[in-house]
Length: 127
Image 1 (cartoon, one colour):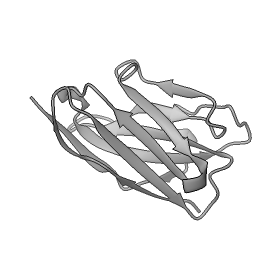
Image 2: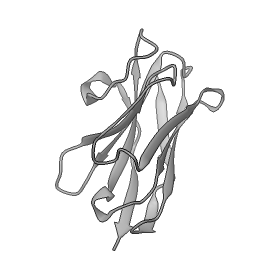
Image 3: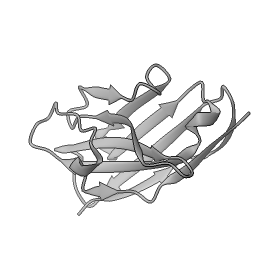
Image 4: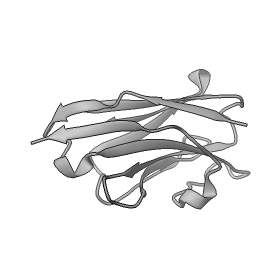
């Protein structure tokens, strides 16, 4: 069983940056595809970014592409989400997710493909 703990959320002004971290424990990072999802107030959870277990492939939602970057550090069992040029519509609780995969270059964008979730970290972008 994988345990995930997010950190790095907070309050930032429009145009600012934040870096979220997700530390995984209980299982090696290998063969784990990782993703970030977010849920704004009164909205459904939506995909933000994902990275394959090899780290060689990434995928982004259209709303964050060009502003967010997902990366992983296998040695630290940690995945990051660098968020730049933040907008008020980025305000949400951000969740880290992990999913087992046999394919090292497979990127998972469907939340149903993930079987472990963190508790979430709040990101608030003020205008």
